[in-house]
Image (cartoon, rainbow, N blue to C red; front, side):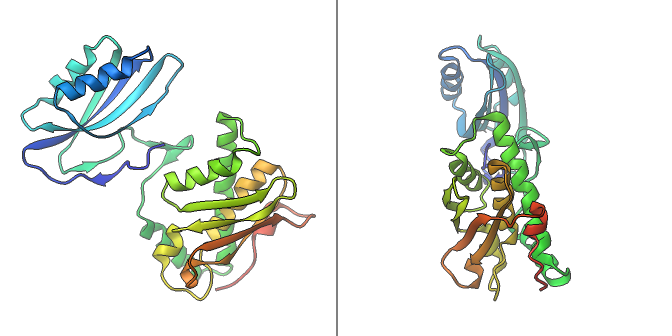
Length: 269
């Protein structure tokens, strides 16, 4: 997954921002041939990402800054003439906006969108201010997202006790949600998650109550799907209330109900 899908690249009258999606054969040294060609042709690589499409082919999506006199179509044709390249697509950012090569954007196996943190926090604030049991609704929404994430990870790799926590931490960092420190005993399903730089707490502003119920739910859903038993997660400390970090406590959910029932804490704001 690529985090830097959208950015203001800046405006330079003497250059143009052009992206290329290159399908190539995964032979030894094939990617080096492509990058060497770009360097020789004075294509400044701003950033790029790789995606292994099949066992034999790969996709290299690269964002370049080219001299304004370079014809992007002709440049793309030159790339395609490389022996290791089978397909090339290209696009031009006329206003210095760099965005995803692929539309729609795919995140964890489903369609994703890029959004400002303020947009998401405004939705959370609106619920908190107008909806009864808003915290429970946000927790339940997060729960579903966490379940989907764990299911996806289980479908593409061997998720086990050695990597389930690090996968979750890497996901949060990649999408810009926060930096996680996770302590969770797989035998007791107890522990805690420290969130540094939570996007919700950072943008929400001052509050007399914790505001990261959505994250609590996401953690609960992820862990419930991984452990195969109902897990409860509750935020006990929040940066929005003046604390340095956000802290979420992990514990087995009470028996005798569905996981969703036990995520709804029923607080009315």
